[in-house]
Length: 63
Image (cartoon, rainbow, N blue to C red; front, side, top):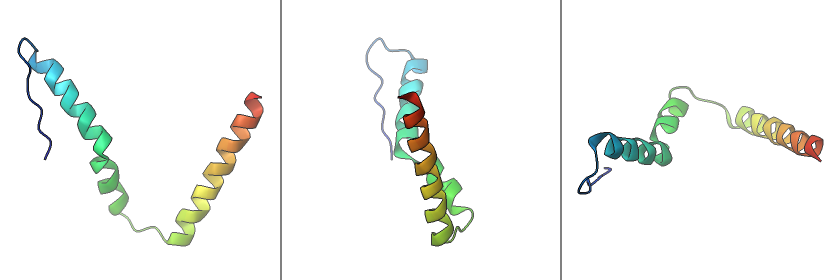
């Protein structure tokens, strides 16, 4: 459970923004979406390889 303490003189909006940022960093939402549908390990590995090749190509193009 995430706990955000509101500091003295801090607005509620600012504390809420800190909470949202902390929640995003935990990765809960991404994990929930990933578990909604099963992806075979071979398909997952293939997509990771394609993604890595794409990133490598983009980095080569920058140079």
